[in-house]
Amino acid sequence: MSGALMAGARVVGVLTFLTLLTTSVFAQNNCIDCHLTLEDEELSLPARARSDDIHAAAGISCSDCHGGDPTIPIVDGDYDPAKEPSTGFVGAPGYADVPEFCGKCHADASYMQRFNPNLSVDQLTQYWTSVHGQKLREGSRDVAQCASCHGSHGMLSPSDPRSRVYPTRVAETCAGCHADGDHMAPYGIPVDQFDLYRKSVHGLALQGGDLSAPTCNTCHGNHGATPPGLSSVSLVCGNCHAIQREFFRSSPHFEAFADIGEPECETCHGNHDVQRAEDQLLGVEVGQICGDCHFEGEEPYDVAQVMRADLEGLKSAIAAARATVEQASVAGMEVSEAELVLIDANQALVQARNAVHAVSVETLQGETESGETLAQTAREMGISALDELRHRRRGLAVSVFFILLVVAGLYFKIRQIEHGGRQGD
Image (tube, rainbow, N blue to C red; front, side, top):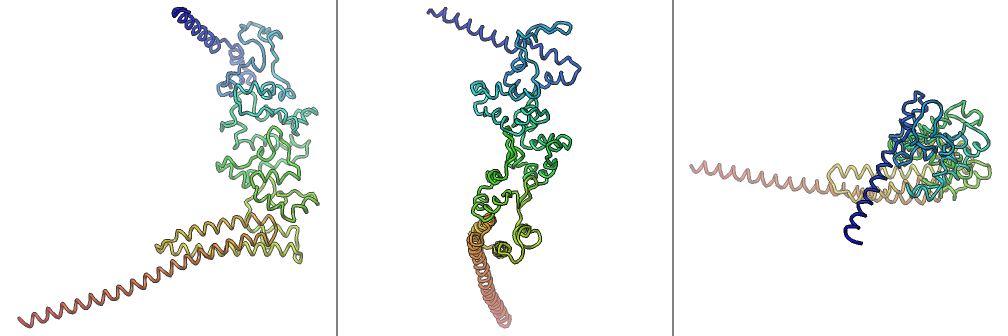
């Protein structure tokens, strides 16, 4: 092919590309033009909300979901040729049809690959296994489906802080149904979970900006939302609290709770209203929970008492060591090594608090004795630093004393010389 023909082919190719691009970008969309003029808020919202819509940003048009031909001119009257069956118009899906409607794209791996290869395509399958999906198939029309949580038009990315499924807003979205007494009455489900969660250690952490803190879907799932059964609670909690779960599984509580049908973590910590686990929960003093099941004179009661005493003993040892090391530090002594040992002692305290879930004096003491040894080492290092400080001060005092003697001797010698000089005059 000659150079002229090749150049001509390139020009034709560029012109064709520009024509297609222009047609794609500036093609008439009568869906938008018409709905923007409608006074009905519900009908005009889809057109107004497209500016932020994640689907619109990906190039998905009205007709891609609803069918029809948006390029056919609008005509007067009720007849709209753009909605003829021949155009593939399907309109808005019924409430029960929404999951399959969304699943046409979101369950199609080859289609979704074009937009987000990392996006899971099993949401529809998960949904039909959930309580929401099962109830919808049974005929309920007050259970959540895709649009209930994500919305329909003006849908935002889950990573957008304005999205209804952004971590800080998930609980509020779920509460739209689950905190509504009239809505939940037919199911006999409590409606105080949202209020309890907001006051929990998890809810407060999330409100404080910790986006890794668990919210509703962290424990219950999202598309496959099914309240965890009693036997699975530790698995749910164990996703984050793995060490505590392993200690618990070695404890006498593990089989005992299973035998009487008690949930594992929930029994002591609650579920939606989980509070910060403080040391006073262990033992037999005020604030404890061991006495809810065990009573004085029983071996478990004594075990709880001994475990609490061991834990307090380690805390006291660390506090004494810290006070000594801080005293030396304030005095200007080098105690960085002792401070590192204190960090290890504190880590032993963390491990001891985890080991409490094993409900074993021997297991706990393995951690507390290690921590107490470290604390004692740090304290001895602090004492050594203070001894050195006192030694330095004594040495300084002696040095100052002799310096003063020398100065005094020089002073009197100078006076003596001066006195002798005056007598010679």
